[in-house]
Image (cartoon, rainbow, N blue to C red; front, side):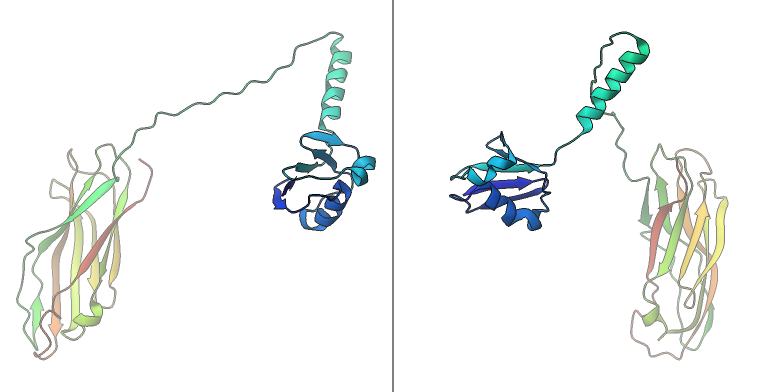
Length: 243
């Protein structure tokens, strides 16, 4: 087998016994080998006039490469510089690398659901008030100083319509001094996705609570399946500015 290359093209082919000229012709279209490409056999340059008489053997390496004029331009630039300056100068190039010692941090914020939210009774054929309750607690990473937002989504509205005609949840975000810093926004069966944006507020270490502060509902006649009255709310915390 013979190794044949041109640019990024490479193949191991059964070319033993064939000439370099035949190999060039065979791969000219497939590899896009230019007519003036220089052939090298086992790293030794072969003039094009010798290609028909040079046979390939097993384990040979045949490479075609485009002739470059960059060296000529470079030498011409040096000679021009010498002519202009009237003297000889040293030319050199160096390379080096650097590793940036960046600091790994955790996610810019974490969110945790309230383990004991306030509950309320949901009667059939009834207009009732929603009880206020904490839903989520958001804790930014200690080094985070940017703005953020929380997106709340009702995940099971398709089930809840069996229990409710109307459900409205008034949502606000509070800092750790109990100051409302975002909202109110209203999460409903018709608008099951809201976003509340806020900046750092309160005292360090910063924490924020997402709360239902008010609301109401109107239900259908009783008889829906258990659980249809229970909202499933998803919270997603998003970055809104650089720290």
